Every structure is written in structure tokens, then in C-alpha cells.
Length: 346
Image 1 (cartoon, rainbow, N blue to C red):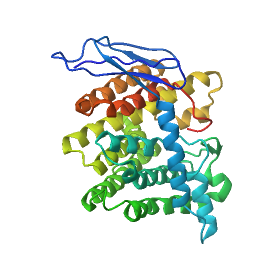
Image 2: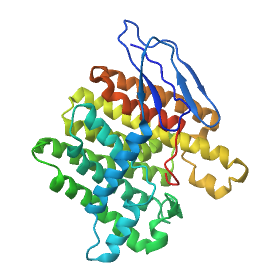
Image 3: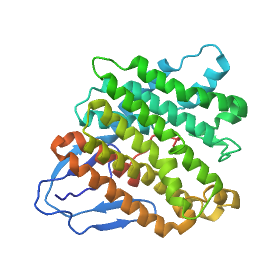
Image 4: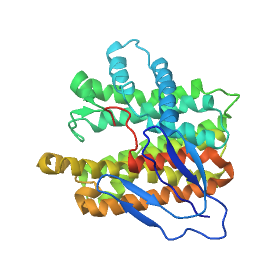
């Protein structure tokens, strides 16, 4: 089974070449990545599907934003909720975790309405992790998503409380808002356990710990845990909601992890190139656990190539679902190519 993928120049439409049945495995890959983007081309016989990723994604963003607005209303104590909403409802946020969750759920025929509560919970958890990451005692970042970091507006104390409150709110939202006629209780329990694993001491918290403490060969672990975990968890949760098999869940796990790390590696490559002449020591310190900082840009480009190929390879197992897998293919290309813009945030 072989495939060929490219991104066309249009800002609205991505051309995705889906896998076709073939007695052969992957043909020899000819991978090229420019200094600012990646592109993978694998020659093969294929069928073409025109897929408008930007419209698909932005439509979901609008629906998820409405759900989040209702999920985090202002109530007592007002100041905490204001701080929570400031980060959760940040304008221009890409909503990558919830969008990937919905796409994975729909791959297996799941109802979008069944996925929305978990999708919102993933965004709450994601926002909480960013609030805490930006704190002076952690990554000490003054801005996030095109606006001042939460602690710069509400203070360190309130930022900690807002992050702390968003984690359990996400779990509560899944339990209270998921339609019981669409998702059996056992699946919800697995979703909650998956999110708890991803953010806990063996997941994102472990990545942040090693990012702070350092250690031999830390870069791979830090990248997987700080950035891969959220992508992995989002894809897996979508599959769990729709009743994917254990083998399919494992494919989603590897796929989501690869996409999450790929996105960050490409971010670091682009940032290194645009800031090369003014990359001060403080910025270098903050980026010390990135592939770019440790191995250099050229090695980071090789890593991105490998991650892109790895993510797409995992999607081969979903060939029987036809065009439903196209959004997941397109997310990989977007992570590498950044074929269109959502605005000012990341």
C-alpha cells in the first residue's frame, strides 16, 4: 500500500492523495524540506480527494468556541472564572486538540455531538497546561496566543488557581454533558483515564519536570511528553468515544504523538530561522530542550521528515474507512507545511 501527498498553494484547499490497495509496501521516499517548510512526496498510483481543511477546521473552531463559552460562565468567585475564560477563550486559538478529537471520532462513524464535551475538556486541559507553563517558576513566558500570559494580567496566584480549576472542570464537563444515548459509560471512563494519564506525572508533568531539571538525552523525552502527549490524548479520546478497537486506538496513539511533536519541531525550525540574527541568550535558554537547540536546524529538519512519514504510516491502517481519514492526513501536512493561517495565536 503506497500513497502520495502534496499541499497545493491555495490557502483554502488541500489536495490529499489517499492510499490505494497494492501488494507492495512503501516505495522509496524522496523527502525534501526547505528551510521554512517540509514537503513529502511518494510517487505512486493514487486517487485524489479535494479536501478543504481550512473550512473544516475553522467551522469546528466556531462550534467549539460556542461550547466553551457556555461551559465556562462567569460566576462566583468571579476573578477565578475571568482568569479561566481569558485563557480558554483566547481569540485566534487554533483549537488543535478538540479538532483532532472530533476528527478521530468521526473517522469511526461517531456523532460530532458525542465528541464536543470531551473536545471542550481537552481545550480546558490544554489551556490549563499553558497557564502553568508560562509561570515565572516554569518557562517564564510573558505572552501566549498573541496576548499577555495569564499571570501577567491576573497575577501568579490567580493564574495558578485558574489552571488548577480548569483541570477538574474538564472532567466534570465530560461526565455532565456527554449524551448517554451516544456514548456508553464505560467509554467515558476510558476517556477520563486517558486525559488523567496524559496530564499526570507520567505525561505532560514529567515532560515539564525534565525540561526544568535537564539530563542526558532529555530532548526526545521532553518533546514527546510536553508536546506529543496532547496530540496523542486528543486522537485517542476521539477513537474511544466512537468505539474504536484496541488496535485502532494504538494506531491513533502513535499518530497523535507524532503529529504533536512534529508541530513543535517545525515551530522551532521556523522560529530559529526568523530570529537567527536576534536570538539572545534568554531565548536560547528557554529553547534548550528543543531539537533545534540541541542538534541544530538541519538535524531538526530530518526529525520532522521522520515524524511526518511516521504519522502518515499509522493512518494506513484506517484505509477501510475511506475518505473519513482525510482530515487526519491533512493535519499532518498542516503541521509540516503551515499552508494557511488562523491569525495571531499558536
